[in-house]
Length: 190
Image (cartoon, rainbow, N blue to C red; front, side, top):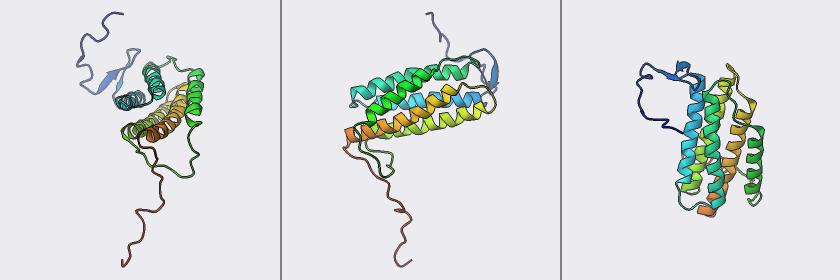
């Protein structure tokens, strides 16, 4: 493959538009750019999780695979009509999710995001993936989007929730459970 990015700046976006993968120009705040831009942000957040040195090798493998998937998914969103994501990818996420979840205790309460640097970064990545999913659904209201894309993002956020639990237990040995009404407790004498 030749040099793909020989010049980083082109000045073609200085007026608030950008080029899609098929060459058409759209506004930088279009639903399509919002969708694939948020997928890119999620991929960067995944990189923050992977930047933590002490994470289990199986988690590292799965999240690295996901980063590659997200490049393909972003490409699908960037090129109208292009297809990359397949149901097999969604099924793979489900298998990974089930494997990680098998050793975790059943949740009886909500947990707070945190638990250690990698777990907290994973929770942040999860919420960005949820936003990417919302942006992609918004795009699908106006333009064709393959249903596998939304399913992949939905399942990925579920996987990241479970991986965050795994990382929390790996880093600190525990999860912080949400306690209803803590900040809304009445103050005596008020």
